[in-house]
Length: 225
Image (tube, rainbow, N blue to C red; front, top):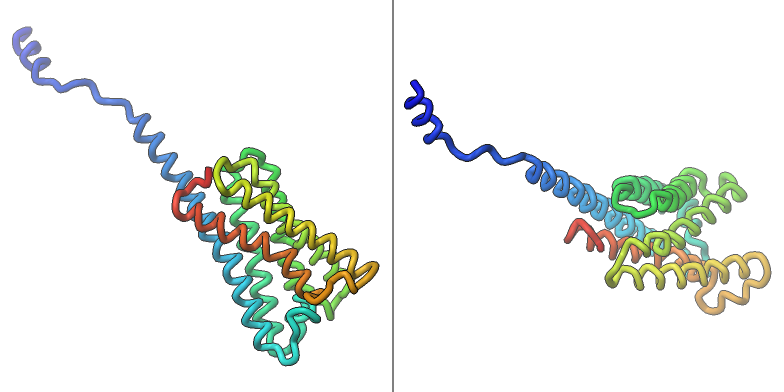
């Protein structure tokens, strides 16, 4: 019997390896998959927003990219439905992207900027300027602030080229936000040849372009650091 036990023991393989490394690898893959999904969501939010704004601007009769505000596209009959739906989608996707990145962000409060931008955009789409000008104005300001400050809020999460891109996007956006507020409240001549519409685009587009860059990078690597 003892001989059989020894023979049986000799045939036994090495002890089973711990499943921990596989578990760790699976968790890492899951995290990177979630970050890549966040990249896709943010890329889609920014891409469709810019494309629809350009398309609606071309469709709207008599619309001027400089003289008219961006929100005017939400009250012109030919473009109202398309534009407002796009703005609402931008807000929803931006907020979702922020929540998907929550585990990656070194400071979880940065998610609040995604929510601020998203909630402001949703509000703009649901409350066009003709319905409630004052409410629309505050919601638009929330969206402008969110999309403008978001890149700088995320900048500390980057060690590569995304960090300077983030800073530049916020500097340009906040600079033109100051110009826009001054032009609306004090002196409209500050807009120069680009007009109110051009100033608004210089506020919002740097943040949207940053989202395109971040989304593309996340989809490629699953981690922008």
